[in-house]
Image (cartoon, rainbow, N blue to C red; front, side, top):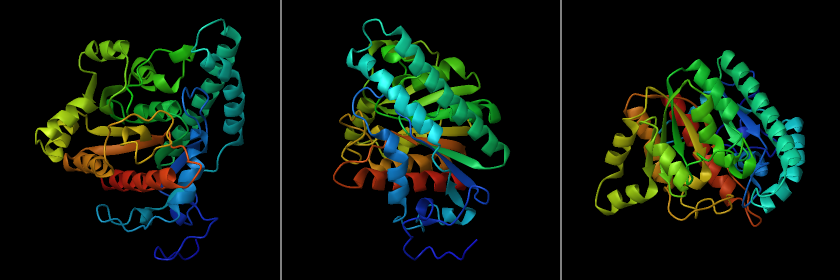
Length: 336
């Protein structure tokens, strides 16, 4: 490997965070998944991995909380041209279905879209499984929030009884939203129903959900525990310290924790171009305080995904925020 100075500016063609690592020599490997076939409002998340890669090259690599995560080696795989192709085909076929709100006879289109989503899931699953078998720590960069199903499944098989810490504006517990089995709005429904190795789903920041999702949470007998944004805000306004709130919610997680983060879980002023922004949400420091709380509780972050980053037309703000959040997630994963 060429000599590397973290204090120098990174060249424009360098790897993630300007690092010279390859997937072969890196401890942490990121999987970019440029796929957003079922996005139901705003788009652009298929370009999220590229935006994060570009913005990451100007992130300072010494971190006050986690030290020097870069020292173990961090690399991102090249985008798969197959995933891009499946995304383009599926988006074209999904467009009239989404425009109709899922109403009408779209059996052929739904079958084709679902089939390409299944291909994507299979590719992500096999890629994650291979990297885990090689001893890598794995993170996924979407794409919309449908993309990490295979990544979650592979981690759950390696870490049975794993818990998921799900940060999001949305509950994502809809059954086949608009007819799409693998909708971005159905990711946690699919995980709960189809990945039995997941012991617990803990959701934080949820503020947009339908009655059926609320009923699923209530009927889960504690398998799904949701810390709604309105209740978190009420506690903060009542004077409760965020650290205490973090300790409460982290306490219900099992030892092994997988982070699934939709960027719209943040206050939308931080990533305004995400596909379905919702008022409210977490600050950057509240999120990093939550990651610190996992470490403080002696629990282990085993893997993660970061999704729904959509680059804006006038600048790199969304990618910049996401790149810094990504580095914090990697740092705390390594520290645990």
